[in-house]
Length: 352
Ligand SMILES: Cc1cc2nc3c(=O)[nH]c(=O)nc-3n(C[C@H](O)[C@H](O)[C@H](O)COP(=O)(O)O)c2cc1C
Image (cartoon, rainbow, N blue to C red; front, side):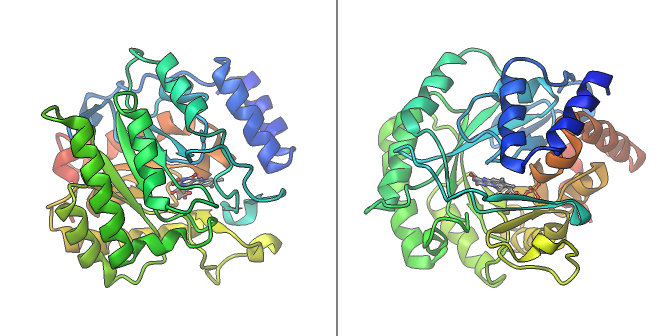
């Protein structure tokens, strides 16, 4: 790690969390971030729903909500980058402060509320990076005041068709009132049914980009069977487990623990891993899973892969470690796979 990078991280930690984040994105977009070869380890090359990934370690949604720096994050060593959540119309999100670091817990609480510059600006940035390579997905959401939330996801898909390498239907953020109700059986049937229709009519006889469904860790685990069945019925390509949690584990030490919002980082890991295992059992290999929540090192990433994740994503650990973490996790993950005699990531998926 360069002295300059270390000094930058120290300075960022001295700022309020949201300002630090904004500065980090601006610095990355100007090419000031770390540079690591995402394809350094042959053993990490893998396929996810037809997408060729140089490694299975992705950047989770919410870090780059407006698609300002996906190429910088790919250059930092991430195997894929998910931009968004984007909503059709720009929106301010919740009043500040709305992003809190809990250093004692290696955790973050956020109640951002889908602050973003809207679909047009987002799509323009995807257009500007066309042909640059690397896997960059679009995480789609609904405006807080939307009268037809399912239509918002379809608007996102339609505008970004041919621009994003994959799409994520995010129905699990806790900071847009009522959004998580879309995980209920009837609401999901309406949303996924209409989304699939739109997707089929956009694709015609061409192949569609993959579509992922991102779920909450706070779901009743018995919902896993039903969600897997609905996802398969409506052509969802993979399920992302999970978003942030509104629960507060007893272990939390920070005085900020009761700030309202979604908790992420280390204290989310156990719950996210538990839900990943529930979905792995429900799926029995019929639909790929992407494991997210509390990853801060190679061991965490490896555990999710062994629990059934074909790929993983992370965000909160970057707040404490900086974007150089992606390359460190890759080095560690490659070593762990080899030490256990695996020849590929795919071989280790679900190998308990
Ligand atoms: C500040 C912040 C903003 C987030 N915004 C979004 C978002 O807009 N859409 C989304 O699907 N997930 C969002 N997430 C959730 C992350 O993508 C991820 O699912 C969650 O933080 C768990 O992973 P982690 O423990 O590695 O952070 C956000 C997380 C944080 C910390």
